[in-house]
Image 1 (cartoon, one colour):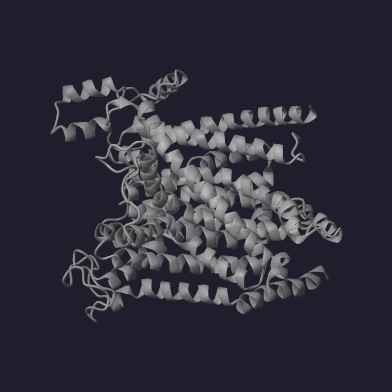
Image 2 (image 1 turned 135 degrees about the vertical axis):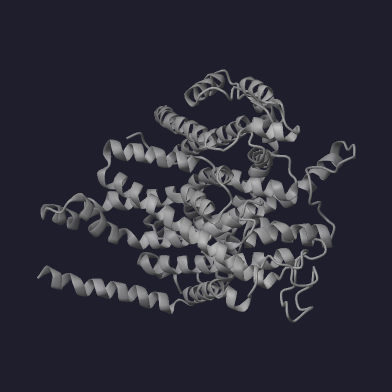
Length: 292
Length: 328
């Protein structure tokens, strides 16, 4: 009886979210840019065979000067277009794995602290506060300095420094939801804590988590770019921030070396933010009235 | 009187709550830095072209690097209790002196950037909220979103191309013109000119952030009952926007400004490297690259302590502004 009553409302809700997303031009633009970037990262070898770190032409060719290198070449004669295509790979890989790590850590800590509360909750929130107080970019620098600037270590460092946001969000959601009727109902049916956390409460906290995750991916891309700009990136793989850092030497004569990879970062981060804003509007119907 | 008591009670609680955080920060930094492979003596030896085992051992005992982990932590805590942050092997100077020499420059950068971001960001947010849904809102929202998505150091570099390389208006390196002995107004103008681009670079992201926050917060407050009452009383719209809506909308903004203080330290590291600004951020990078633990420990500790201090004062400011906040 109750199952029949619940299911239609559930489907109705998700359909309206989907429809709201599809009606929003910003979401469609953002999703489009992201799909294109992903395709560029995956097909880099097809369009740019050969190592992007190799010298292929005369150095410092301006964009458009040679049709074979539409975005020009840098001071070592490397193809800028190829660097941007391969750089998408490093950026996306690092940002996605860092976000996966911080969401996993944050959900684990936040769910335990919010569901159980008490002493365990206090200790977990103290730890969260420590990680939130330490300047996170400095923490990333230190972790990368301890390890080596490889893709794995950079992702690990960004993940470790950005999970507190998720933990606080999930804790707040769990504290509200643990008193909800459906949780009491599940508990009275004899479900154990694990099942209640993973199958009852977590799915209901998913909406704000998705929005936060999209913002985390965007900020991870920015952190990685800053790190690479400081010279802390894998020296054998092109990255957007690294390209900006090395293009800086020629800023007076060839500013396009700095401008182009920067534009690539802006496009991807902008796309993620548009997607995040759209998701927020769609999942948070209270704010919808402000949309024209 | 009652209000002063309330704030005193809140102050005691906030300070008490900061103690475990401070200790956690200490422990985290210490454990992290112990994980670094190789130590400062290795770097010293490679820079001076090698050293015998006996010299290495002598150096290690001189800097206290031959003790075990627990002893080193204890020694560090004892030194801290005497307000002694140790000696930097790299610069052969007391860490506290190095840090306090550079700190004012970084604080100038951070306070300048935060001030600029709050001013422009709140102004833009108010404009957007006033014209919500119409073209000024849409245009500004798009501009703010682009600013929110761009790496600050990239905008800084583009500003260098325009204002330093092309127009030649502003310097792009250092904190003052070298080799000139300036005094009075000329000195101040020179310093200000060197400050413009770094402050702008550090503030871009936060301008966008505060604009978005203020807009959302104003829209939230506008829907509340007391605003409807004010409108029903026939108060002029500007007065409602400033005295009723903005004042309340700024509460979440001030809380977050405290939290962003920590993030600004990170941004300062990139900005200082970009503009050759002699501050704490660049010192951090130097310390990491030369594996100077004492120095790094000192910087991390100090910046985290500053963050704790700012958070505590923000909590108190909040309590002073909002009489509803009580010790539960």
